[in-house]
Image 1 (tube, rainbow, N blue to C red):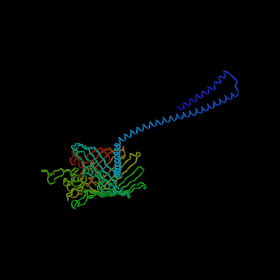
Image 2 (image 1 turned 45 degrees about the vertical axis):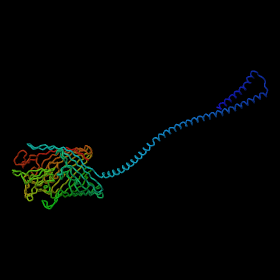
Image 3 (image 1 turned 135 degrees about the vertical axis):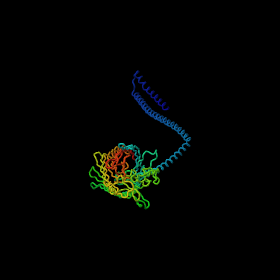
Image 4 (image 1 turned 60 degrees about the vertical axis):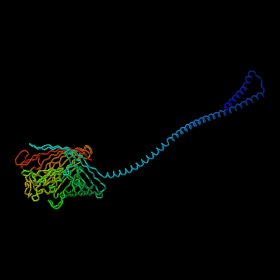
Amino acid sequence: MKAVLKVGGILLLASSLLAQTTAPAKKTARKPAAASASDVQALKDAVAAQQQQIQALQQQLQQTNQQLQQSSQQYQDTQQQLQKAQQAATDAQTTAAGLQASVAQKDAVDKLNAQYADIQTTLTNNAVSAQDEQKRMSALESTLGRFRWTGDVRVRGEDFFQTYSGCTACADRNRARIRVRFGFEGKLNDDFTAGVAIATGSLGDPTTTNETFTNFFDRKTIGLDKGYITYNPVAHKWLSLTAGKFAYQWQRTQVTGDPDTNPEGFDEKFSKDFTSVPILKNANIQFMQLFYNEASGTGGLFHGHDSFAVGGQVGGKLELTKFWTMTPSFLVLNWRYPDAILNASYFATQATTTNNVNIPVPGSDPPVFPQFPVPGEGPGCSTPASSGLQTSQSCAFSPNGMTNSTFVDADTGKLRFLSGFLYADLILNNTFKTKWSRLPVNLLVEYENNLNASSHPFDFTVTGKVADPGAATRQDLGSQSHVYYADISIGQQKNRGDIQVGYAWLRHEQDATIASFNESDQRAPSNILQHRIYALWRIRQNTTAAFTFWHGRTLDPFLQNAVLAPGMKISDTPGVGILVPGSGQTEPWLNRFQFDLIYTF
């Protein structure tokens, strides 16, 4: 304010001086007069002095303006500082309020901090536990990774049709069946492998793992199907030793054993692969020792001898052309003391009935001995009717029927085989590649000969005890020791969508193999002519649909123990269901249809 008053006084003084300067000029204009040089000089001096005063006033005015600007800036700065002070005061109030609230919530905060510390401790403990659990799971996964799980479930619908003109006993048969198998194979070190498997099926029938849907929804039997140890050292991959109850380790077909049968004993295989040798890609040889009956004591029919089979096989792999691969093999297998099969225990056959040979039915002539039920599951004794023996006297083990030639030893009263059994089995398994990788052609041919077969078979008239088996044979027929088998198919069963169709033909003479272990689905174990048509479709990677048509009949119905259609018999008098010797008649064909759905683990 003082600066403003000062500026106003300066402006008034300047106005007064200007008024004094301009007034004489106007008066001179009205009243001109002569002026002396001194007056002029005095006037100039006065003007110069006034100009100096004006300049001084202008400088003072500029200084005043600068001071005003500085004062204005200081005022603005003061206002800003005041605003900051006010904001600081507001913030201080807010902070003070927050501090008051914090003080009020201090206990809650302390409690939360304690809970947080507990949670953090728990999480730490859980993390440690999770790490330990992860270590245990990793160890378990590593262990389980050494196991290979196997198994399948198969549901089957099955139909049988066999008839002839005038047959009143020929009824169609329809049934449903199930098969369940489960197992694992573990490789706990680099040299040894062990396996265990269980399967459904009657304990008295090693040729099938099927269970029929019957017996009032009862539970189905499950038994040990496999249990074995294999030694295959990394340092000697050419060597493989197996012991226990195992799947067939050698090349074979249904001719010498049902696919569901797992033999028991030992197997030694020596195999060598070749990469630089033309044609020959593998050569192998193996030996097997199989045990099928243990005899306790030193007496009896077998004088304490155990029943077993020993043999060997040579095989290999040949790449004959770019498109043709052959896997040949030749097997020799000798069955020792096989008569134990015809004189088995009731337990071994899971017999369902027995007889009392000492108490016949009153008034029966010839005597008829009553049968009594026993708690076996079956299939039971297969003692041939030709033996003339009751099942309690001899319990033959042959789940699908005994079709070999047999006789009752006149000295011991025991049932015996007419033939011995020494298999010589040649298999040529061929694969031909086509331009369609999923449609290879597979051709398998097989010839088997029982080198210990009798020179001549028994005919249907031989029954009861025989003192001289050689004198009771059919001299017009040669040895019934041969099997001829062929199987051709196209396609494969490896990936989803694969299809395979095929046809198989079999001519199996009566004593070519032991009837007890042969294929269970064909018309009979031996003495048959069999056709088979099959098709498989892999719907999913682990699911397969299959169809099989079996068309077979007895090869020679006039041999002893030949299987005949229901109600059919042999007689010299023609009639319904009568086969007349020498007539060339045959048994009617049995048609068997199987529809399968298989789920594989």
